[in-house]
Image 1 (cartoon, rainbow, N blue to C red):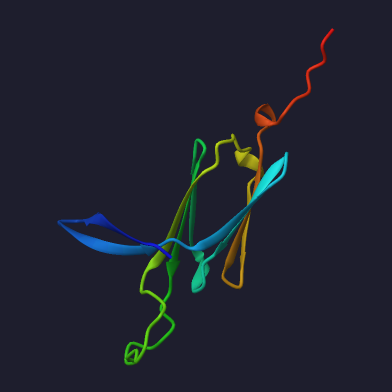
Image 2: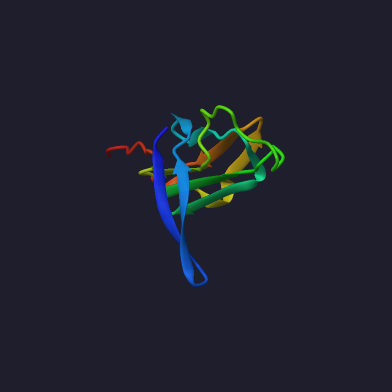
Length: 124
């Protein structure tokens, strides 16, 4: 996982926020794409999905499950949220997008817009 550090402006100051790129897979068919993103520790309310033109941005905010009084003795999981940006290179039917999350896996069904589907042209 890659770590990306970005700065977000807050009222009068800026803070640094850490993101990691989650593991993901994209499957393609002529009429739709399916994207599966592995984001353990992210609840349904912590997912933000933005589609602008052909660029898909997925962000997942982790929630703390351990009490504040606990101290980590060993850590391999980074204390960072998830961010994934994908250039789809195809127009998506925005009204047909479906998203669901289960057991830390976000699944997106992205139907290809009719005008972007391949067509067979008959020569007369």
